[in-house]
Length: 379
Image (cartoon, rainbow, N blue to C red; front, side, top):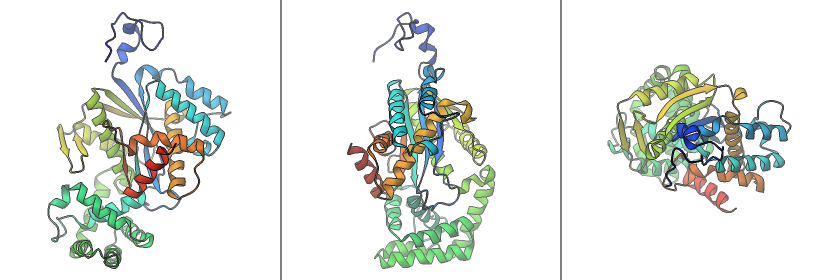
């Protein structure tokens, strides 16, 4: 690693000495964040099969000059802010966004995100809900920490019919005892038809605790976070996102600030999650699949919420996440992905490819992850 003297010309080519330019921002970054595919507590949404939270990690030395984003808006004849949902379906626009993103990467910016496949999340929620040893005497404490085993079981549930998973998703959203019990029996019936008798029998161990499970879940939704944010997929994805950012910053000795687009429904919930994790006693626990649970944030210093209208960099996050959501939806539904959108799809790699330094993740089935990797590797 090259050491730059304080009195040498700054490597950003500003013409100033390093001490008068980028030295003050050394190791400091801001993560501009937006979301796509938000359907709240509705985990199974055929029109939105994925939820994504993420954006760009941008060196603080580059933040002041956002002319790149404004120039793209001018080129695309956008009067106002760039909104990815409206713009990423056009091939000309996709080409322009590819150019913008390539320029940002050359500036030292990095894409970062957590994507969640909603169908897989429902399958994982089945395992989490019914195979908790506190409410199921057929399972051991291993089911609380062995993520590899739990993921393997979730893959089996993932293969069940959409209608069966939808029945559970509906029951879990309402948390009515009779509906949740019926959904449990429906899950087990289909698992047995698929010759997954052991898993079905273990799930049935929760039958006598359905009322307790419903009561616990209702309490968590009301008491844990404001606006019942805990009932949504947004919160576990956000927790995974901030954990990866803190881990990335610790590894590189960086200082990060999150700037998220304002969100009325989840802003207070996200603030509370960040407070709970950042103010906790410093703690790290490594799950069996290698995932690190971090508490007591030392490097992810704060979270702010700004209007995207006032922040071109939040707009760049909006465009990135919207483009990736469009790419994923077409791929998921086995629809044609044009070359320009496929090129944008490569920016999802931090979520699905582990190159040793993780600043993203994917919560999805093996089948879906393989499909994504094969698509972006085919370019």
